[in-house]
Length: 161
Image (cartoon, rainbow, N blue to C red; front, side, top):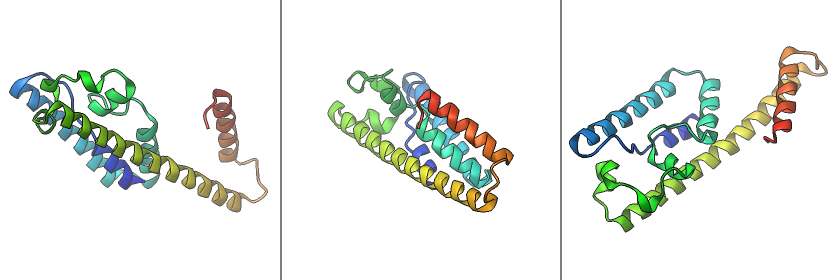
């Protein structure tokens, strides 16, 4: 899951920050900041934190502030109305049709990574639940079990699966 989360982080497309050289610098700084965070988590975070972060990134509609793809997904930016001056150089140099095709390709890649993360997260949760059940046996009064049961009930009431 950590590898997929890093790949998901790699789909970040810095958007905004102004025109010209200053805008390019701002977008470059934003991209480098995201890359540093991704690297730091990949190296330093415990496995459980990596798995939880991967799922959060896959599900959170605001995981990446200043990300073109997320802004398109959230509907705050429309592909056909993108200000080319606010794009990184690699997208800015493309024709509008090529740019739209490239953005749609990147969006599809991001959706696939998210789907894989969600699938693996479900499998992980099922595995951990089975291991917990084996470990606890008939004991259902453990604190972890009570917390998990309460969370499941709350999620169910909110309509979250």
